[in-house]
Image (cartoon, rainbow, N blue to C red; front, top):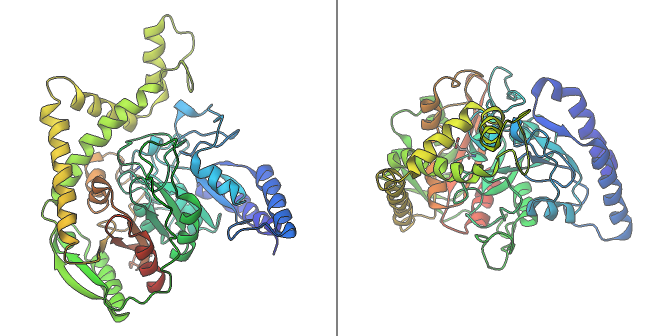
Length: 454
Ligand code: GLN
């Protein structure tokens, strides 16, 4: 099969199914076909690499030269990025045709993809359900066969939770492993990009192409790029799996618990053994994150002022009026809520009580993991406490949506790598994910466990 044929296949499926799913914000058929032709040329010339010719969909948070990068916000509805994000240029370099840009929660703030200016994406397994978020469009296009590979970002769970809700594989690498250059910033000390794919093996190959030092991101890790596919196929005999009691406690749907425990039992059959571990400060993670992430967001989003790029209100009377109305009209409700929370937490007089305290909790959560990894190689548990919510179910109850991030957020606070692999389906027909978390730089191990299990 040629890249032109493969790319056409996905474009045909997008044309047929995406009107219903709403997983793409932008589809780029001409660019995709042109890049597919170039990929086929590389095969003829003998310069093709492993992923050359395999199409990819980018979350609409990655800047793409000449293509709209909206972050699913009215604020950036008219924004054509003048350059490529590092990840985008890396995947262009290997010759992956770009199918388009995927839908997401506005500025990646959310767990359902419902806060998108372009309307919610549907979960391909059940159109009444959300695909999760914020990388919900990315997860949906993989699950529905509208792209074989997709990029996502994970600030508090946005790769792993939609991967779980849509029955696909998604890995959030160690903080700093993938360059954030050209990714619209949400909470910079958490944001990390990663691959969303059908299999762990695909994710390993894709991460190989995405990762690596980039001097344009000051938090990019200066080390030689690991080979994330190197461990694929290694035996799991002797692997010590930590099971934190706190991840199987109150609030976890019993059916999800059974599916996750069965998955862990399968992994034990492959030679792993389990040990109990403790993450005693897990309940501090969500409150800490929902101070720190909005604080960073309020600072990052100050650049959207109607002056330099993005939405500008009509007929501003003066500068203040332009700022106020451009931001008031351009941002959606959830984004405004986070900016207000963040600005409050950072304001003089409250800084010590909120921001500083949240930083201390962040350290405690991280120390829990350091301690736990003294007695195990990886930690396993659920990705989310339930299967995918119904569309509309959480829209009026932000706090309950925030609380549903309880298993994924600690991993971002600590900057650790975590993967979600498909573990089965609940009786309602909605998928469940197994969450595997490892020490810094253990991506290859996590991917191999996912690969062995699949
Ligand atoms: N649900 C979390 C939030 O709303 C995480 C989002 C993300 O990882 N981008 O902030």
